[in-house]
Length: 98
Ligand code: FES
Image 1 (cartoon, rainbow, N blue to C red):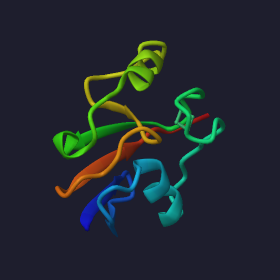
Image 2 (image 1 turned 135 degrees about the vertical axis):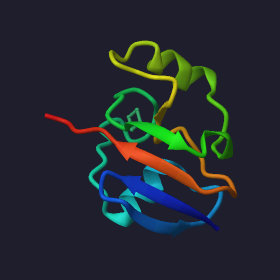
Image 3 (image 1 turned 180 degrees about the vertical axis):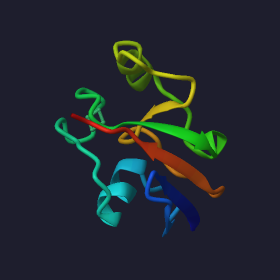
């Protein structure tokens, strides 16, 4: 288990390691969108990870290619559907969508 902190609400959740960020956020009822069903195709699940990036699974080619197409990405950007939680605590920031 690890601790997932979600911004801007500041809520924390205990999540099993090996769970994708998207599944963890959905299970928690957080407002995360996933139009493509978690296949790194829609970019709706773009989040920032200010803390614990190294605890997440490494960025693979599919995610990297999609991130390259997103306007406004930062070095903290991840696709929640592709990032899998490890054992260390992670803080994720949800992006406001119009
Ligand atoms: S859910 Fe579509 S890119 Fe992650």
